[in-house]
Image 1: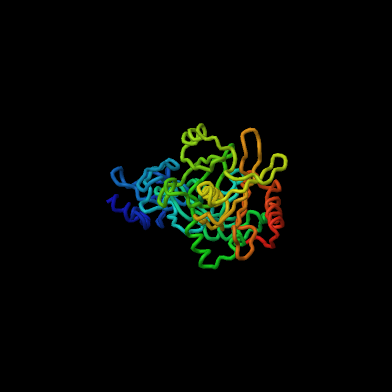
Image 2 (image 1 turned 120 degrees about the vertical axis):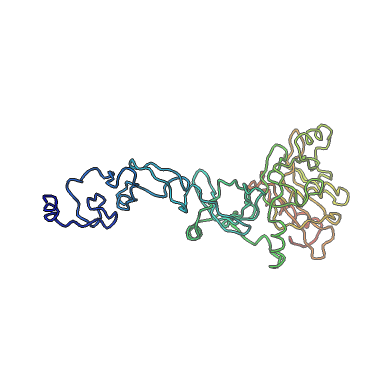
Length: 377
């Protein structure tokens, strides 16, 4: 009887909308009994009943989902253990952007200054660890192979546009220009750039200098042919202009070689500067190798394997070791257009010393001696 009376006077209590329990501590819409107030993680469902996931706890930072390294991984956060939600993207596992030839992307130009510039992907090796790139802001002579860590695979089009629009001042010597290709039509220029887009020689050891090459050169097939890997360092005798793929081969050649000057007549000497006239018909191999050498530093040069119709005037510096090639110019023996100069080159290690101006003046001096009027091609 007393039990029945107790039930009649029991006030009505709403059950929790989440767990359907009257004495609830999980913050549902039901009223919470004061006696049941305890620590937040205590469950009133019984020891065998699992506590349901509470999104309110997640909002307060007690539980975080999807922050582990891998889906399904257990994470400890604020004393709460849980598993990473399936299907959540993990930044650490983000795949690198799949690049292809012709793509534009950002690459590290100056490492010390963290200077990022726009590049075009020209070629890549088989395992995609090295990329041959063209720097958009510069001449093709600066095209090079870059390691993977100098490529920004995550850059956006907006970032590329910001870099592209950034105002810079360029040296006319290094800025990309098609003035070197004067006389080539658009179709010829496109074909030329396609055939010579990737350098086949990275460095050239020439005498005591190690030079970084600027452009592709069609070397003899015994040295390099299409499909071969890039030659990291090509060795060249500065007197005979013979090519070798290893330093040991060059050293054996130098022990046997007695030639210490270009194979022609010395027609000018002033102090330590001399000029030799070399006939392409009489010294064919030497002149052909000189053209291969020149093509490494001239983008627009046409290579004529028949060097017989040309005379080569080679400028040299003299010391106790012999006559070292500085530069040269060539001209046709019989020119229908009265050209007095066909091709001109000063090697990079001797540039900005006045040799270019000297060579041009020398070509006009020869025309004056021959009593001919003419101009460079």
